[in-house]
Image 1: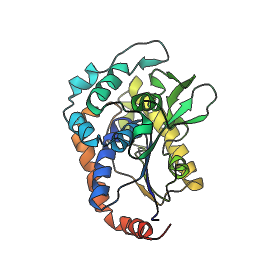
Image 2: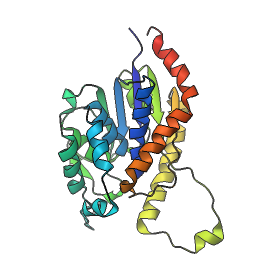
Image 3: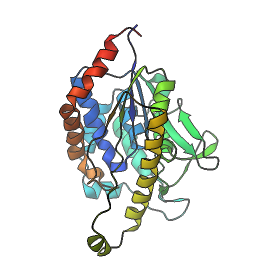
Image 4: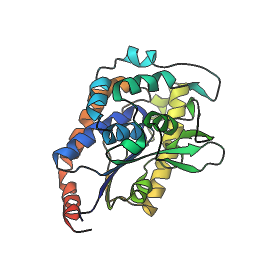
Length: 271
């Protein structure tokens, strides 16, 4: 029996559309995973891929305009977040569907975080959109989700790049896609000119936390290959820039095709 390929898709808000391009390019090289897991937006792309609805997701997100993105924002300043995310999830379900995880063609899991215990939660059954919503509750931005008898928030809080979940679901060889923003000092004089907005402050704080967690966990739970498309210039809510992000993901894989050879060799070996 040949080794089983797993794909771990990391969190990253609007940067997450790059995952679509990565998946497309990997397919061009004959790398089709049997296990797909994700945190936050990575869970959405993983779910679409596992349910054979990635085409539908890509077609829809590439039509989004900035105005359309903000139309989907159901703003509320209570209940633990700026928005509920319900309108957005309903729209995603309308385009991608909402099968049960147990019905998917690939092994899939979404990673969430228990708000009160800090426990890492692997969602492996039930409606796909409920799992994705629970995994995508960016603290302060989206309200927590009551699911599985607990309040759940973004899986990136505890496991932004869920390599460990991929391994637990039976993957022998793992490709991880890290969309964490590289942190740079910047020019103090230029930075002082503009006070960070609420969303910028939230996004930067989450990114700093997730970058630290990812680096630590990769030491303990390494992937066979980590891909890092350069999407640093994408802001938290740049969901309307899907075509650009997808192309960046696709080009990154093609530009690093030499790194895929050891993966292909591993997959040719008996398990």
